[in-house]
Length: 177
Image 1: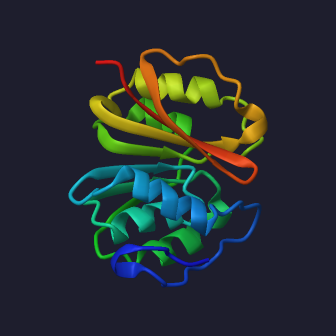
Image 2 (image 1 turned 90 degrees about the horizontal axis):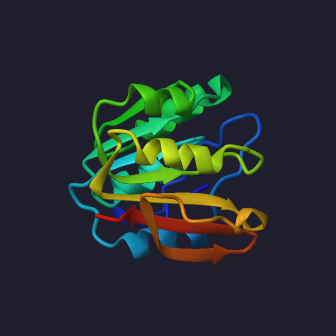
């Protein structure tokens, strides 16, 4: 797996053991193109896995980055991967739901890439929107399988964009305010 852009573009990273569904290169390139210049922005990568999304953000200039991964089998690879980052990536090895409950600050960009079989995507988004993680300026992105795509609006968020990548979709949400 390789980083697709920024100062680390082309660098290979370690794939952790266990079940992993790495984000496609094309999807990562497109998502970061949609986000535009993220220099100096804060970035949260929930369900981080290998850390590839956090590394893409760091490579493109994000300043304050946190990665959250619950799977202990991925710990060694995630820590090795983020060690190449030009900025510190703080790693948390807890369930995403617990991280959300304990959060102390907001982020400019929140990227969710839960396992496709994860059943609580809507609740997760609602909990983030109601937490300190999500501010009036935040953007929340979620990567999910196409067969989950029939969602009702998630208040208080507005879907600002949606992109299809093979059998998956990335939705972009902003605040109504």
